[in-house]
Image 1 (spheres, rainbow, N blue to C red):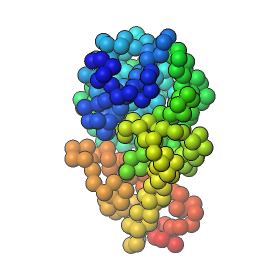
Image 2: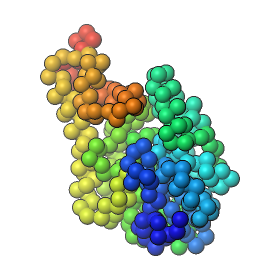
Image 3: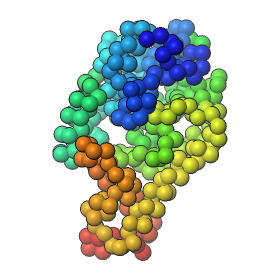
Length: 300
Ligand SMILES: [Zn+2]
């Protein structure tokens, strides 16, 4: 691997492609070639890319944007190097079993499936972090720096990084995808996600480089707003499904948010969708948009 195999963002920052071109269950990683420090942000670009990056560039430091497997699965390829993770809930990262409890608990079936899936499909192994960062932390790599911007909602520990010289925001799973925001784990939070989107729009980046889509430089604010609005689109889909009173199980069976699941991983997709639906139902109950009627939910 040489620099030519990477996708250039600036003269010191490059995208490491994945065999899926950034698509889940893999993701783009970002290589920072500073004059003092060579760093890799996230390690979900696939085992072969991780191996080659380590061999070719001998990175000094790995940074995780948050603890989802498509961002941390390859951490073990960089054992012995500094590993920086977000401070938030950092005691529940690293061990696959702990992470499974955190992301899919208390659903034992989903947890067992997920643990096997990340080990086999993503070659994920346990890892230990060496350092933690928090909101506002500045990583200075020599000639290029990044400022950590805490953007919870997707997960409690989700971060973006701002490169001030070019006003580029590395936004990870604020990925400007057509699917929209993912909040399918118990700790995910819709109001926090919306507040994080507002925070990003206030920064007003000139370029948004995410984990699952190539950098966006045109109509950035419109793209960010459209992404945020997909939360409302999801809620409207839940409302539409509740045209008839339904139980939570009946509602989930209609897959109002995902529509369909990737074959072979239905168990975890069903878990994620249920989690997202439940968060909308909680909000709608609070706002009086729906009311419980026995086991069923009814529009008010
Ligand atoms: Zn994620």
